[in-house]
Image: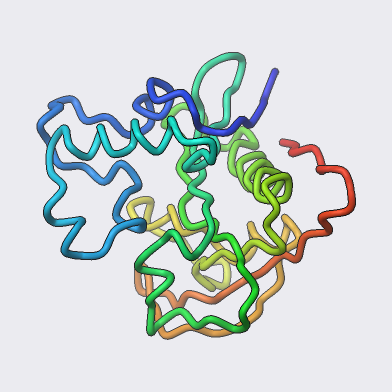
Length: 201
């Protein structure tokens, strides 16, 4: 089993994760956390795909993609928090200091690839990408579900346990809720002087 995580510069691979059957449908394309509510409402249909295409073409990728045996298996949204309007301006998720942190806000695994180590690889690969891009720390905002089942529609935020396994620790409470569970702010500090760690399964 060959599992690798790479920066998401290939728009066609990103489309494998997000493109709707009807190109005119206004699906998320993982843009909702990048835009203000006004911008998000205004961007519809194929405009959303084109916005993601532009993000993929930038030097800084909009996230990372997992490939398993050459097939697109999963996605993680990772970017400087300052680029993510809802997080940058949130009153529910606090800024605990002035560090220019990156946020890991979305984890998605394609059906058929679940329970194969993809999520852990995505988190590791996203952290690695943030590190080599100069991030001093990565934050996540998962649910603190105490082992209870999280509905798949809200599972993209991740759980406390999966981020603890990846070396994150709780840094603050939030007043945000997802799927009926409280969300917490977790952080992993990055040693920019050390070689990038290899993301594993």
